[in-house]
Amino acid sequence: MTSLPVLQVRAALLAWFDAHARDLPWRAGAEGRRDPYRVWVSEILLQQTQVARGLTYYDRFLAAFPTVQALAAAPEADVLKAWEGCGYYARARNLHRAAKEVAERGFPAAYAGWLALPGVGPYTAAAVSSLTLGEARAVNDGNVRRVLARLWAEKTPTDAWVQARADEVLDPARPGAWNEAVMDLGATVCTPRAPRCPECPLAAHCAAFGSGQPTAYPAPKLRAKVREVEGVALLIGDARAAVLERREGSLLGGLMGLPTEERREDEALQDALSRLAARMGAQVGEPLGTVTHGMTHRRMTLHVYAATAPHAPQSVSVSAAALSRLDRKALALLEAREGSLFAPT
DNA sequence: AAGGCGGGGTG
DNA sequence: CACCCAGCCTT
Image (cartoon, rainbow, N blue to C red):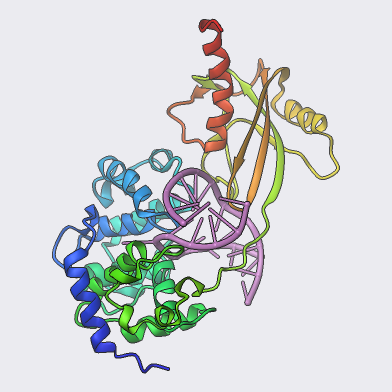
């Protein structure tokens, strides 16, 4: 199976990379000796997040927390505020926790030390140790999976299969550059739907290209069904200052949001609203509208009501809090109404 | 091994 | 719309 001419493949891809590498802000510094804090932050930010989007958060995050000591010393709410809108908020909380460990003990000196940090898995440990320590560790991400699946024309690559192939082709002389090269190729040439095979430095060696059906590799992953979720929320206050509660648990955990109750199975929406009003000691006012929000694995519909609550907790600044997109949409309902008071129709 | 976890880009 | 994105953690 490994009749692949590894030495030729390495030379071809690294030559292409030396000419076409993306210019990215976390790539400053000598090859294999990049700044560990910057590389680490970028890798966490880019987990399941496209580079173009990660770029919009990276500069802001580094400006807010220029060093690992600054990050470690910051309140978690500030870290989440910097992460607002980026999704997968456990990344920010784990990064913050890990920063406290690193500020105390220093940066890990090898792959295993990185892997032990919260939020750092096999991919991130391989990326950071190869890029900052020159360690020969092959990354396995979505780009690598697709590039290698096509190179070998493997339709259903398992994680172990990808890692084994990645370990074989990794250039031990330039592990950091090799890892970046495969990911750049996957992101800019060997793309999922419309690969630019004529521009690919590996086309001559690529079994999927030889088959004439490069996009058939790898086969699409099976995906979980989207769950429909419906709930009610109260807006106690206005669009600038409102009663917010901290979300606990894995879904949006750590963010703030409007007081919300999910409608239970076989429950009427009114009953969910009553539960919520009772919990907040609130009197429900007029309905403000309904917002919907998609989140990959669920589709949420939120019915928002104005409410008053004499003994409710202090309202807080809405702009200073870290909120999910769903809560931003809910608050926008009231902003639209307030605006309409001054905007004759 | 499988499912949960955000939000947006692409064809 | 389907499918994917510099994955990780929990069960």
